[in-house]
Amino acid sequence: MQNGYIESFNGKFRDECLNDHWFQTLHQARTAISAWRHDYNQVRPHSSIGRMPPARFAELHRRLAGDAAQQPANNEDNG
Image (cartoon, rainbow, N blue to C red; front, side, top):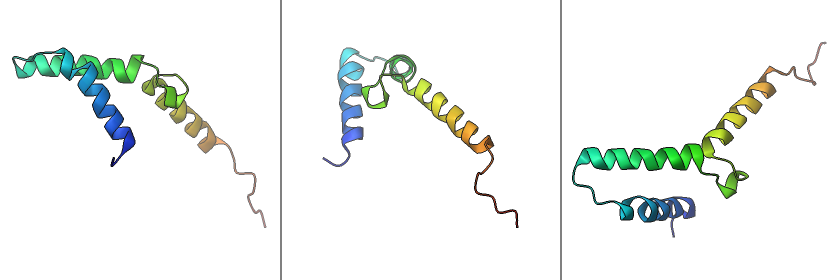
């Protein structure tokens, strides 16, 4: 096992997307993979990030990081 996260993702992708479709054209493959990727990143909750979709988690993280950056530092030296 090299990277558990990547191997887990690859297994899910293979089991839930690639094994469920028989692609006859590149367009069909791109369409099916795009739909699966949208579901995986925008809709499906992930247990590793508090049962929320990754897109929602990322937005929350960006918002919290932005709020933290806008707060003044409490340990400024005025002397």
